[in-house]
Length: 102
Image (cartoon, rainbow, N blue to C red):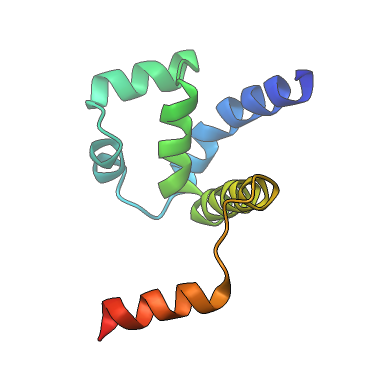
């Protein structure tokens, strides 16, 4: 848990650097994330982004990291589904796809 909090603080500390290095137009990025300029720069200065806001920013500032996070979450969910027996046989899935596509 301490490691996760440390990582959260590290991300806060890196956001400004990522923001300044971004190839995306800064005004457009602020708009994509749903902030007004004033609110965004205040949060940036005070390092006051919520975890959801940080994830939304990372989606645009570090897309590879964001995609890696999403993939890890999907793999964890798949593992849970397997453990909880929430899977279907491959032939059943293929037949369902055939029916829906044709």
